[in-house]
Figure 1 (cartoon, rainbow, N blue to C red):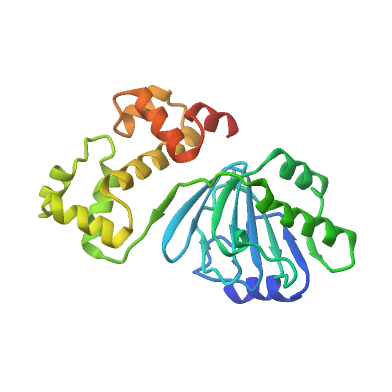
Figure 2 (figure 1 turned 60 degrees about the vertical axis):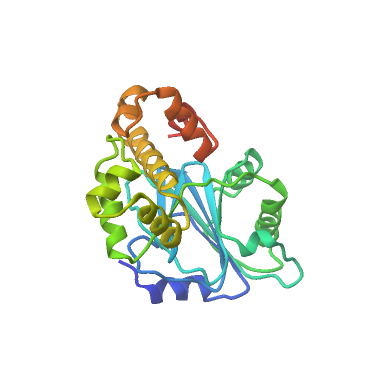
Length: 262
């Protein structure tokens, strides 16, 4: 297993290079960061990335851009997870707000074609090489695509009371999970539970439950042969239409579209 020091030395060994690594190699590391901006592309499977503020879920055919020095660790180490990591040095002459913001986006047809062109590339590429210029151009295209962000991001907290509630929610997704019922079980009024979610997590109780349900649906779509109706029931939806609409609202695609990508 690699250490944080080994990963940092590999990524930042040549400050001016663009480093391309076509394998899982950051998984299981504690929280760490790099001097370079990181483009992590998920070609197969679904990745889970943890930051200090939230857990992010990156499905197949999506990528995440991480600004330089952004603390993170890769949580999933599934056999079917196929990823590409590209690390870019900072450019003084070319700056854009896109590169300062953590975000998950779909891999466009254009980006897919560019990646396919360099499908055998691996290792460091240095300024003045045509491969370096090619990869740099690919980076410059990212903000110009104006793609809609993928919004499955679960905020995290160190609050023990709230984490007990979160654990209960995740273990009881098939149930109604109303503010009244969950609050009553843990000794909170509706008002208090509403406030603690908003203050500690920055989202409402209802929105958090929606996200956890859709994340579970993504896992079931990926790892089981359950029908859409069975998955909807498993995560607490009695109406498949409501399930499909919520899935699209949070992921920008229907469950059937997501399933077809796996």
